[in-house]
Length: 126
Image (cartoon, rainbow, N blue to C red; front, side, top):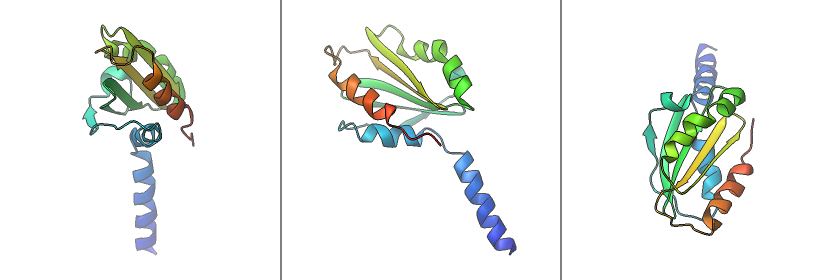
């Protein structure tokens, strides 16, 4: 019985500790190759965990926030990730956020950005 409770507790902890992996899984459905994700400090983005990656020359920041309200209120901090990018988008969905920065002007028509946003918008929220 104790072993069963321990396994259940570990499962709950693992679910709570999930980072932005669901965002990366959703983005993978956009048909663009993602580079290896690297953990980045979440504190500047009012998040519990964040990763950066790239797709089609675009810089991406995916974060998990404590709750949807904090994800929405972190917009200004997330916009800072884009820096001086000509095109940048910040989108939140539930406790998740996605920031896309086209620093190299690699997507002037916005086709790749649109694909990524469409995939993010399909992200299942628990």
